[in-house]
Image 1: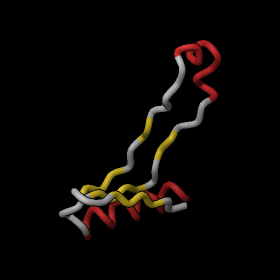
Image 2: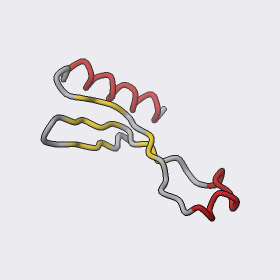
Image 3: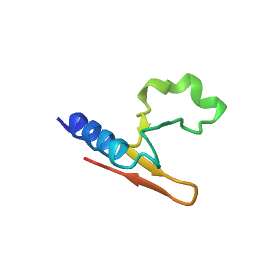
Length: 64
């Protein structure tokens, strides 16, 4: 149910604020070279719920 709410909020802002860049990125971890063999599958995904961005500011929203 949380994923549905996040999608709703993301699409709401996309519709209501068309002049602002709105997205939900996945960030890559900055890992050491030795980390590859240890178990990358155990590292969680870094995904923000919603980012609102213009040329001056960036707002990150956690919708959970």
